[in-house]
Length: 267
Ligand code: ADP
Ligand code: MG
Image (cartoon, rainbow, N blue to C red; front, side):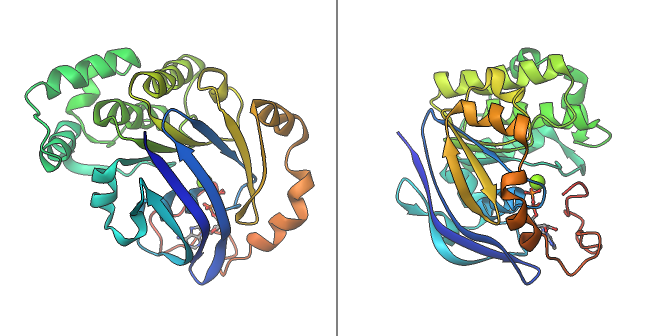
């Protein structure tokens, strides 16, 4: 059994306080959905958990099975068992998916002799065309193909805890079902713990959440069961609206740092 424990986590981005005290505990086999308005800090939380440069932790703690995650470089966080499916997966020209997975296996002293077969069977499971296995990582993939590519890596790496940032965006109905089923199966077969960031309950139809949290103004402001997701889909985040205005403060009029290649264009 593994446990990711986030306590009083505060973080700044570009000088703005974005996370203002996040408390969240994710155990093996559990699915926690985090929902919330645009700009609330959901992707920031995912970046902070994996240690993306530019996201400065100013307080609080994150531990995985008691180990101080925040003290580790990103690759060691991954080795400790954390995985992030990015909202906007990065294209890496010249590096194939196989190369990346092989390097991951080597780093954790896992034999890669069956890797090709594993990639093929994972691809089949989520309806991901095998031709993409040969492409440079994410290069010239559609939004939905990139999300399937992230899911494929998740299935192959089998981490302890996965953070899935809008894994559903860009997926058509069939792909969404395949992907959410695959993740749900991992929670049962490998006891994967999941923190899934989403705006839509359709992802949660197959990947059934044990808890639904609302992140607004950089904090978890409400926690409930699956019914909370349905309720939010009806009512939106109007209830939290006033709080949202303060969090969207940013030095850039568009809300996007033009110098940041990772900035979320839809945030
Ligand atoms: P969400 O994923 O909940 O929509 P984000 O975590 O992406 O929100 O963003 C939270 C706030 O932080 C937004 O106001 C966004 O503009 C700002 N922000 C996020 N990343 C950066 C960055 N790299 N540079 C400047 N501002 C950022
Ligand atoms: Mg986001």
